Length: 184
Image 1 (cartoon, rainbow, N blue to C red):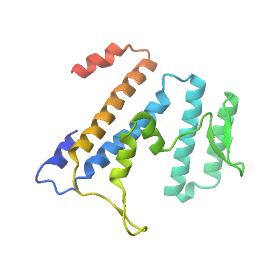
Image 2: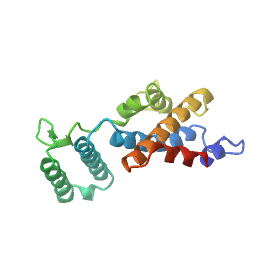
Image 3: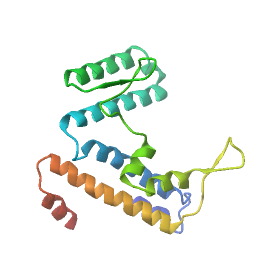
Image 4: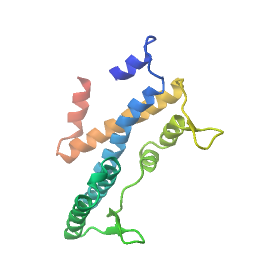
């Protein structure tokens, strides 16, 4: 929150859309956690989602570190497959037979935002990237639309609040613990 306050200061030299970048980093982590902590699923489904998100992480590592390709990646995916099968979790494969997920798989960030922050998720991604006349470029606004920012921030904070409560609930703590902690 201090970072957001700093960006709103008149002397700030950072672009105003930086606020959305800060909120976005926290919001992406929150929708991921919310998906994993969903109280409506059982432990088997939770493990399947956890294995799927680990697979997504391995795929992203390959993009950043090409040396992670090959045997390390293949060994880790094989480990995930064995864990899934040992726990009765479906292994999802594409047409070529490559593993793309486990259990019910993993949703894209856009889909997760739409699921857990309906209406706001699409707004968030559309706000940060607007089409231009040239299809090779995307425009990024340099101003702050305060009502949009307030909606995005409110939605992200509400989801964060719910998600922390789910996390504590999985640890056996009553909702009262989180409610009292918020009072300071």
